[in-house]
Amino acid sequence: MNLPIENNSEFVSTLEEVIKTLELEIKEIEKQLFPFEQSLRNAIADLLVEERELTILYKKQKKAKKLKRLEQKRKGKNYKEPTGIIPLKKKVAEKEKDTLREKKRLYKEAMLFVHPDKFSMQEKGQEKANEVTTKLIEIYKSGTLEELQNYHAHIFSGNTVVKLQEIPSKIKVRTDNNEYLKKEVERLKMELKMLLEKYTYKVLTTYEKPMSFVEELTTYYNDRIFKLKKRTRTK
Image (cartoon, rainbow, N blue to C red; front, side):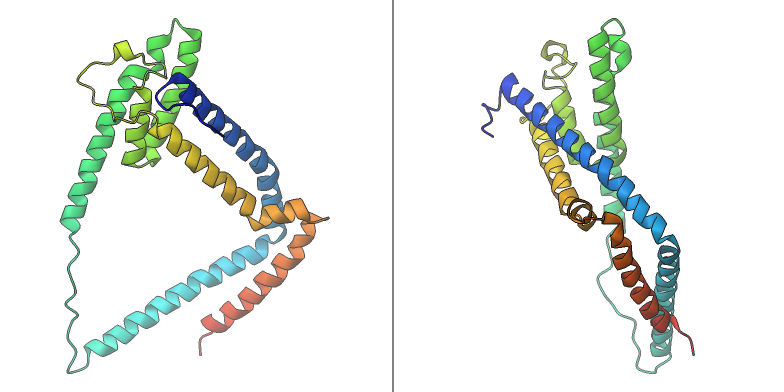
């Protein structure tokens, strides 16, 4: 697709249309795939539980053996504690605090201008504000600082409910106001690609009787359980 020049409303509209199209494609696939995957899980529920329990037991035993070997080494006459580089936990903690502080600042700054209450007299404006604030909260809670910075810039780009004339000069916005939209397109393309490449989706779309895949899963998990039982067997 040939996109128009970046710094105009046509470019923004094109990106938004691409995002909507990708979101619809993803939802359509998920609507078919997720119930199918749940049906598969239900069909082999007992095997999944047993495999999970054995995996946890195997990891615990492996960790216990490692600690036991270390204790035996420590009892040796020539044993010396390793003198590796000490992690800079304090600096990491300070960096995390700075990141959280900056995220909080960006969130509050953006929320002040897009809160739906500001648009109570504008039906379309309030609807858009609800959409923007929902996304803002989502990114603030689970996104990275970079993602929040990009969405902050997107909000103050003049293409959302916030108009350019309303933005105080003290608010600093990244130069590329369309970075959020471009990143969102990339993210959705990757999400769609991963869904299409999932083996269960290939089963759903290529098998004449998709639920017959349960037999293959049963064979796989029975073999894995057999191997885990051997590994976790105590003398």
